[in-house]
Amino acid sequence: MTKGIKLINSHRRRAYFQYLLINVSEMRKFTVLFFVSMFLLVSGLSAQVINIEKQRKDKSKSFYGNVKASLQYQESNSSLWRTSLNGDVYLRLKNHLFMSFTNWDYFRSGKDQLQDYGYEHLRYNWMIDSIFTFEIFGQYQFNDFRKVEYRALGGAGIRINIIAGDSLRWFTGVSGMYEDRFFTYEGTGQHHWRINLYTNIDWDINKHINLSGIAYYQPALDDFSNQNLSGEARLKFDLVKKFKFYISSTLTYESDPPEGTSNLYTVIKNGISWEF
Image (cartoon, rainbow, N blue to C red; front, top):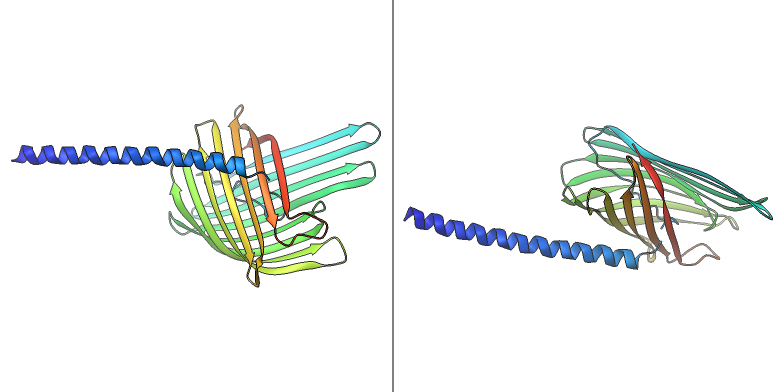
């Protein structure tokens, strides 16, 4: 009788593990299709919505980050200068994480300034448990190309950990924020309280290749027809030691953009980064 019960339990365990393997296989297929679709669909970001999730890292070290800088000069009939600086710094103290993200890009041709773009983003995370994180953030940015003299915002919300595996991570979040934008023409601007919704997936295909994607939705509370939507797909490869090559394709849509600019703004970028 005891042997018969053990045999039945053995068959049940085998059937259960087969069921898990089938579902894991289907989940992998779904994940691959999701990323391929996102990478083909999304093509641009950087305008008014800054992708902070791609910079966020959950590491065990207390202090870490990365720095990227470049200087380019060309001369023919006129001279062309391009300067770029990026820096991400993280400080972790137990379940508290402090983050600073800096970006500046400057283009000049002869005496004409073509574009001056940059931002500073500060964020604090309190990791309540393995699922929920409380976050506070503030940001200041400018973008001559989009006729934004400055955009300042601040807010707070909750970030939810849906999947936190070794190779696959999926987070989503909701927050409230106040946004103040001032344009480069006629002294006009916009001021809104907004809802900030986002979801982010980060997948280590293997130990040398990483694929990530994120989508943002930010409607204004006083006018839901006024909204920002954005998305980004990013592919990163290991080169040597701490150097990595990346390519990203991003897109931003604004229902009420600055005068003389389009609703859609796209960017495709590639480069090399050093992580410490």
